[in-house]
Length: 226
Ligand SMILES: [Fe+2]
Ligand SMILES: [Fe+2]
Image 1 (cartoon, helix red, strand yellow):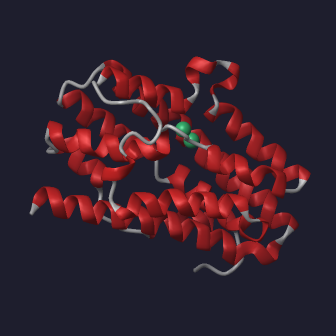
Image 2 (tube, helix red, strand yellow):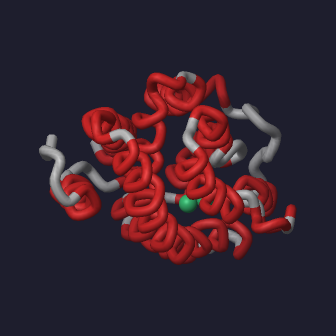
């Protein structure tokens, strides 16, 4: 874990140095239609309530950090347009793909890693003592989204998925390239400028995000490619 220094550079280096298995690369190049449908059913547990866990943490932040988080959340929640909410885009994609967009429809079939990821996001957001972990998790999540979203969109196109499903991912190619800067530099940067002692907690949250992604990817690649 990096020592306090140039936070944003250290954070981006921490994420870049992380070398986990890539589910997005598999989806891009060689996943079957069935595998991608399974992936989308698993992802529905989070994406149908996308960003809500970050909303939990907002009342637990200082004015400066709160204002920065709201800028990001405004975008995740559609910038005032209910048809542009990211959760809504994912629901549209599921429905167009012949999958259920009802919340929790697939909860009984998801692997434990998916439940764990969703639980930890709520745990971080709902506890003031874990506010820095919540924002570190957010920053790592955003910083590892843009390029995988491009690959997943390519895989969906390769398999002939409907435009609505592809659009959810293409939206995230650009949106999360902006969000990662906002989350790392403006949100976590403001938090640590005010409370430098939370440095380790930010990296703990980031590590948690990367680790959970890795373990989910390992499980699915093991099941699909063995
Ligand atoms: Fe999003
Ligand atoms: Fe985002």
